[in-house]
Image (cartoon, rainbow, N blue to C red):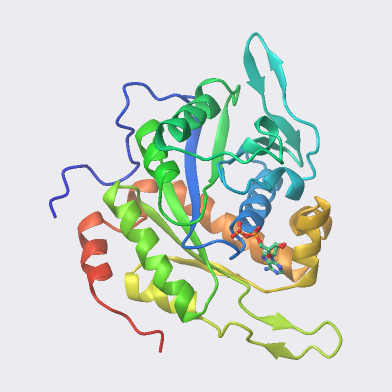
Length: 291
Ligand code: ADP
């Protein structure tokens, strides 16, 4: 397949950049639901803010927007002159579909509607100047991902996975989708990597271990790091206190901070990161084993 676009930050197909004040837009994706994508997004946003960056978090998971709960934001945004002011907590500006659509409303998302809502998230929200805008995508590949790539310049995409084989298959599919829309791939995060017993310290590899790293190596992508499966991380999400801010001295928080550092490093020289579209396509065509 010919690569007719330049590598590096992907340019939107629309005429205007809807968020000119944002330096780096980073999409956070997953092959399937429940792997901890929103948990990772909220903790990374907090870690970036703690590092002194101006950070926004857009919860574009239209099918299950739970970032406001995870970020401890219970009240919706205010408006000013017809524009939406993002809510803010832990130094992160946040907008979510959960603010706009009542929880009990069952919406059937159709392509044009997805596009319209996403556009409003960029055009009608006063994001202001940001170093990073993280976008928590719905799982899988679909209308949101495609619309997004047409609307704003994406500095890169990150994929969150659990380490087992079945999840890794979905990673490849997700990568192929980003490849199609020419978004640079910043790397893979392995979540729920292993469990360390709080009582005896024994380590258990619940979903096997290291699959994310092996997949990254096979696809020639950066491996950004692994996050353990840990009740404190789940609890942080449930109570609206991400572990990065709730217990900054914990090893779990450190794991998130390390990943945030890698992302900052990678984006400070975007053109050097991510895999070229052609070489990625070659890799994706090769089957890989996790051994
Ligand atoms: P996704 O966005 O991929 O659907 P979530 O971030 O909503 O996944 O996580 C699904 C569930 O798993 C949530 O209850 C969350 O608190 C929990 N969870 C996510 N990551 C971890 C982790 N590393 N350790 C423990 N629980 C986790």
